[in-house]
Amino acid sequence: MLWRNVPSRRAIAATLSVCAIVFLIHVVTVGPSAPTQIQHRFPSSRRLAQPERQDAVKREFLHAWTGYRDHAWMADGLRPLSGGRKQQFCGWSATLVDALDSLIIMGLDDEFQEALNATLTVDFGGEDVVENCDVNLFESTIRYLGGLMAAYDLSNDERILPKLIELGDVLHSAFATPNGMPCTVCNLATTTTKEAAETAALADVGSLYLEFARLAQVTGDEKYMRTVDMLSGVFARSQNDSSIPGLWPETVNPRLVDGPQGYDFARRSSRYGLGAMSDSAYEYLVKTHLLIGHTRSVFGTMWHLASRQIKRYLLFRALIPGANETDVVFPGIASRSLTGPGGSRSPQTLLETRTEHLACFAGGMFAMASRIFNNPEDLYVGEQITNGCVWAYQNSPSGIMPETLTLLPCSINDGRQCDWDDSYWAAESRQSGAGSGTPEEDCIDAYGDCQPSSRFPPGFLQVKDPSYKLRPEAVESVFVMWRVTGDEYWREVGWDMFQSIIEHTRSPFGHAALFSTMEVYQRDTYERGLMVRKVLARQMDDMESFWFAETLKYFYLLFSDPSLISLDEWVLNTEAHPFRLTRGIRGF
Ligand code: DMJ
Image (cartoon, rainbow, N blue to C red; front, side, top):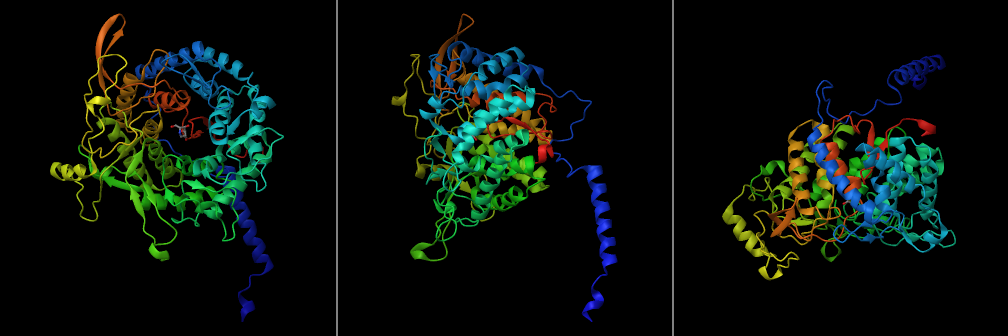
């Protein structure tokens, strides 16, 4: 008899009231969900700041800040060799806004007040600027909106809120397109018709959630949150459409999110990576979940699918000397078409074993994800990726990892060589021309005394782009590994990285990007009136605003007490701007 098993109304009511009581007890005792513990439980009795190292970082920060203040005040950037100015992102003073929160964090209060007063005069909505400039939505969102947001969250200065809204609305207008997807590089004047791009870098579209979600939280304006939901919906629906289901390709098609064969968004390309073009699209799945995951499950779901495929298709082991190879992996670039040869159903996946400085952030991403999603295996993945970047720093001639680096792949599973072997390396590297790239005739030295003193060291198979652009990703992961594990090892390797970077990049007005981390030259320089012979890399006249926003901030925080910008209370956007983790404010 079917009816015998149907519970009575009274039983249902009793069950429901028990559930309601359990739910209420849960909410009253632990809140909507318990806050995630990301940081290691550092003993509160121990003093963990390393003041001498912090001062060294702050000194360098002030050296570059003084250069910017005296020579390029309110420009987007400073030229650190000539003292010139650079306009890069609509002239809204990128360096000024990007540096605001670092000034607060480093306790440079007077400098912060001066910079904030200047920032408040920037007219983000001014029609003539907006009309004459194509706004790069991603860069403007992470640097300007992220920078203002962090300054607001850290200082609680109410004067910042109207500026945030002014800028937020200008950038939000990039979504005023026929299909609601953003125009990624766009004239945002109110009178122009906007259209979503047909080809856009994955990161340019997939790294906008965090800033707009936080803007929705602090303003209470739901329109920003509706945009976040629309955008994450497109990513979620298309995640299995690509040729490596779970990953999105390096370029996507925001104009065609609803194509004749379903969603064309993720079929624009068949190349996949974690570096240039892709990076923060994956990082923001983890970080947006942390910021708003108690209200939406979509980011966690996407991360679970993506992280499995990243581990399967993008990470590889390499033949490198002087390291325990089992503890090192590198992110590479995978290609896979939708169909196999002759249109067959079994496409092949090719892995280009070229890794990028930009991809070094992934160590920290996996380490954070391991805590947020309670998956200890991912902490080990994060450690392995970070080890790879540290290895590249420690073994390059300048002590700094190049922008890109090709390695010789190996595997401990299929019997191929993974333990270092000189003759195997010699044979393999000869085939690919490793060690070339430092011809004597290329030796041009503005200082006269020029002697190339390096060739590519073992393990560096090819270096297509040997430059260093003052990037933060390696120290970013070293910083996260320290905060998550509490292992002092990370602060030691970080200190070595800092010293190498400063040695080569310090310039008259700030710090300069390097042409090559792989070639160093003897050079006579004057220090405090004395001539010193040094072995240095060649500098270029460029200093990106992320030097202030990210690289120096991560070094400073690495040596600070872990309670300063605790990862249990703050989430850092991809430009290292901390947003306060708050729950349930103004309805989100
Ligand atoms: C920064 O603007 C951000 O970290 C971005 O996500 C990637 N590139 C630069 C730093 O290298």
